Amino acid sequence: MNVTVKELPKGQVELSVELSPDDMRPYLERAATSISSSSNIPGFRPGKAPYDVVVKRVGEMRVYQDAAERAVEKTYSQAVIDHKLQTVGSPQIAVEKIAPGNPFSYRAVASLVPTVEIADYKNIKEQKRTPVVEPKETDDAIQNLRKLLAKEKRVQRPVQNGDKIEADLATFLDSVPLDGGATKNQSLMLGEGRFVPGFEEQLIGLSEGQTKEFSVKFPKEYHRKDMANRPVEFKVTVNAVFERELPPADDAFAQQVGKFEKLDDLRKKIEGNILQEKQEKEGERWELAVLDAIIKKSTFGPIPDMLLEAEAHKMMHELEHDVSSQGMKFEDYLTSIKKTKESLEKELAPRAVERIKAALILRHVAERENITARDEEITREIDKAREQYHDQPDILKQITSDDYRSYLRTNIRSRKVMEFFHSIADGKK
Image (tube, rainbow, N blue to C red; front, side, top):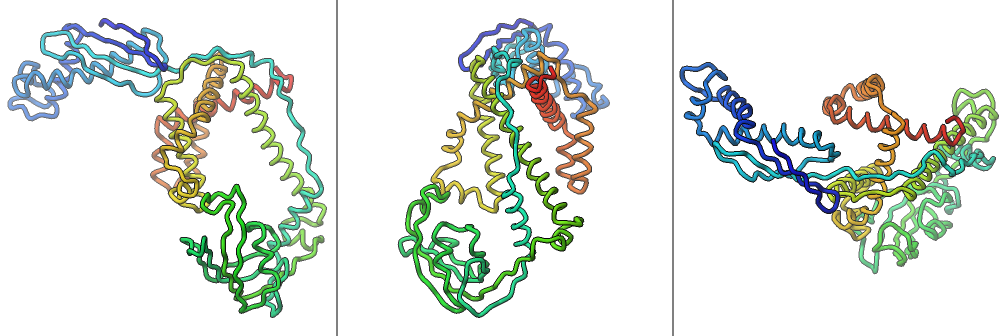
C-alpha cells in the first residue's frame, strides 16, 4: 500500500492511497465470499462458491466494487494510524481508479483535531469567591412558601394589591388582535411583578364584572421584538376577585411545610439549600473563568469547518430543547427574534469556537496528566441511567450504545480535569 499525505487549508488533510493488485486480492476474495453467501449459485452452498464462479455469475466489476468498500474502510484507518494523524468525523472519499487487474486508488479528505500549544494551567490565578446567604434571601424564600399555602376567599370588593383575579384578556398591537393574545378566565396574581411594568397597576380598583381598556409600553429588551419598546393595548374583564390569606410564619407553619419542629429548623434548612445552590453556581463560574484564562493564553491550530458546523448545530439543538421546555414552540421563538435557524447558527459560531477550544484544553490536560475514565465508572453511570429510564425502550437502546459509552468517557474525563484544576487552586497539587 502506498500512501501520500498532503496538508490542506482550514485544518484538513488529504490522503492519496494506492493498493496494488496483490494488495487487493484479500479484499476481492472476501467480497466474493460475501456475495456468494447472499446469492443463489447452483451447485454450491452459500459462501462456498470459488472466486472465478462468483465473478462469472455476478460480473467482475460487482466484486471489485464490493472489495473497494472493504479496502477503503480498512486501509484508511491504517493510513491514519501509520501517519499518526488525529482526525475527527468521517472522511470524504473519492475513488480515483478502479479496474480489474489494475491498482486501486482513492483520495480521502479528513478534518484534523486542531493542534494546541497549551498555556501553563498549573499557575491558576482566578480567585474563588465565598458565597454568603443574606437574611433577606431566607425571608423571601419563606414568604414564597407562605404564598403557596395561602387560603383564597372570593370577595365582592375592588381589586387590591396581593389579590388573585380571574379575568378575560384580549391583546392588541396597533388595534389589531395578536395571535394567541385572547384568553378566558386567566388567573392573575397581583403584586408579584410577573407581568410587564405598569400592567398590574391598571387592574387595581376594578370590581367583578368591570371591563377596562388601556395600553402599556413594553420594555426594550422584551423577547418578542415586534412588541419590544412599543405600546400594547389590553382589554381586561374581571370575572372574580379572591383575597389571599397567608399563614403566619411560626412553628405550626414549619410543621405544615415539612418535618420541622420549629421555624428556626426550617430557616436553617432553607439557608443550607440556598448556600448549596450558590456554591454550585460559583463553582461553575470559577471553572468557566479558569478555562477562559487558559484559552486566552494558549495557541490553537485551524478549526475545521466540519467541527465548527457540528458544534453550532449541537448548540442549536440545546437551545431548541430549552425553548421547548419553557412551553414555547421553537418556530415562534425564531419569529419573535426575527431569525431563521440558518442565521441563528451563524451567530452561534463564535461561542461554538470557544466551546471547541475548551474541549481541546480538557483533552490535552487529561492526556498530559494521565487522567482517564475507568470502565467501572462508565458502567456505574450506565446502570444509573438504566434504572432511571427502565420503562423507556428507545432511551435504553441509546444508553447501551457505543456512542453513549464514548460520550460518558469524555464527560467523566472532563469532570476529572476540572477536579484537578480545583485541587491546584486549593493547594492540594
